[in-house]
Image 1: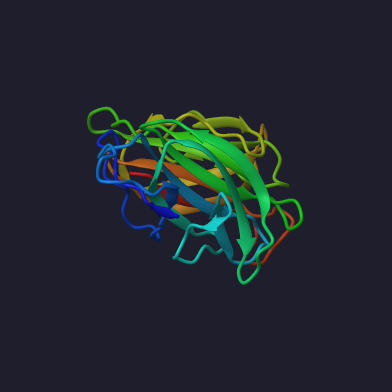
Image 2: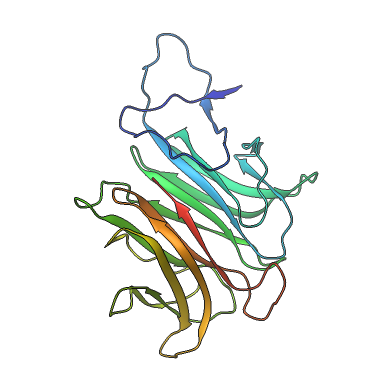
Length: 235
């Protein structure tokens, strides 16, 4: 038997604005058990172009009620710390794939990205540093989740230097300080080249907030799975 975990006092309030996730973890507890067992939090992002709607699976059990389609994310959900097998299934299927076993540390936020093209899907687990940005600043990281885009550079409007250099596939940068602004433009180029491969404009970056910029999709495509940028508000 399984039950919902409680929010550990070590974890801050989950982020808003993303689809809800319900995470099952641990065996049933009695009233004599500790009120606040060691807890982590995890978010799930579908960034696998060409792969249909997914179900997130923890230790063989379905873990999400909200839909998980390409380009969508499930908000951080609390889960007891420990070792888990994560996988996904396609909607209305029981075949699990993109399996991975991961140890979640107490008091730590994670994001699990489902990536790559059909028949090659895998996952990428990141630790998310959601400590507060410096005063009047924001924090941003960049993740290259495009299987065919090559090594990427990320530029932010209003800056003279590249924000991230030479990010290979499944490469995650650290969260770095960034100035807030109401109409930021983010652009990616192949490392060392000038052609803009994708951009996203008029992005509002607020002080005190934390963001992830994703490169997802395929450079070889022109449909809804084409190479593009996506902004996730982690906090």
